[in-house]
Length: 203
Image (cartoon, rainbow, N blue to C red; front, top):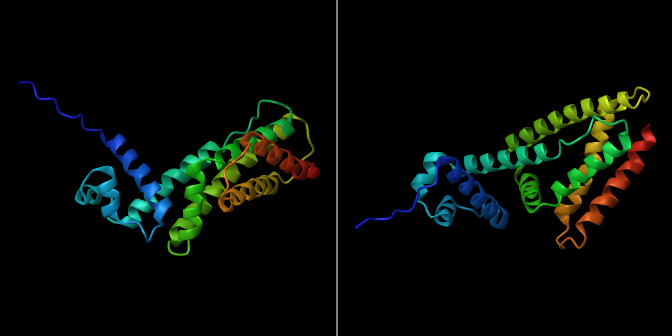
């Protein structure tokens, strides 16, 4: 008789399953309220198997947040330099940021980052490094777009930092807002236009 066995997930799929399960557990229970045992139980494996990949809850927590922070910053990199319309590029960028910030994972991750930075100073350092890298990339993109549009020189690094801070305010408002989004598209449009109103006064 032919015995059918369940196909084992490969390592990448297993890690994705662990990360998604751990993120939901940390989101619901916080760092202190989540145990490696509960995560192992949720993914249907043993705690020993989990510890082979991550020697401690701290290592798992940091691995999950690193992955999600990288995903977040990769998602908000969009800034078109191929057109001469800086305002449209700014608008599209703000729309992209707002769409990412509206996602459940982004809200969950940054609530955890804010809550756990006092306990884990390396988390603050890693977040700051990602912000600095993002602003450097954004500075180069804005400067290229401005040159294409023949705009006068400006301190584009300060402009990029202002743009990020204005976008970050939208994210922080989402972290504090427990109500569901009624009209996500309108919310993104209002945000993008409000940022443009502030940003374009610099030019």
